[in-house]
Amino acid sequence: MNQAFSIERVPFEQKHALKQLLELYTYDFTEFEPFEVDDDGLFGYDYFEKYWVEPERHPFFIKVNGKLAGFVLVRMLTSPDANLPSVHSIAEFFIMKRYRRLGIGKAVSHQIFKMFPGAWEVFQLENNVPAIGFWRASICDYTANHYEERQADGKVIQTFISRP
Image (cartoon, rainbow, N blue to C red; front, side, top):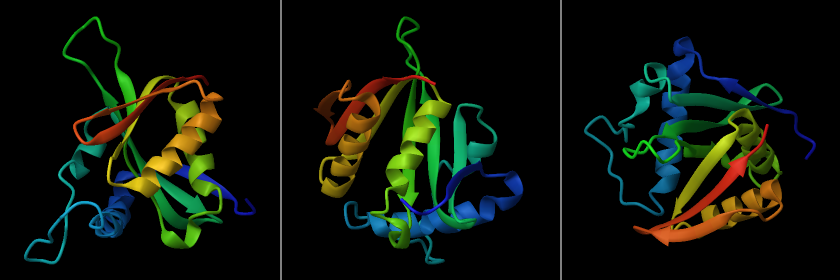
């Protein structure tokens, strides 16, 4: 990977840029899910505003050589059962096509895992074959193949423990 990348928390003042990237991401995702645009031609994202008000949600830009190249949205999943631990999860992950297959996605995912040590759960829709391949390879590499995978509710789910 020759590209210099950075992961930067999305400040409130720049959330409009994330909103635009979410539109591109959702458009890409229509290959796997039948999302429709609204009367303004936008997909929207139901949880968008929550990323600046809920402490368990973390929005990050991915930049390559200082230019926007994508984003990652991290969230904490809490169980209603107090005996079960909370787990970190990738809510959304997007690398613009221009920057794919350069190793940036894997490097970003590994850095995000290190930023949030502890239990992780990453899932993909079972019909999103490219995403399944990407996350299996990335998580396998990050954990030295110490992860578990299961299928449930039309999803492929990987679980593992991250260390700082």
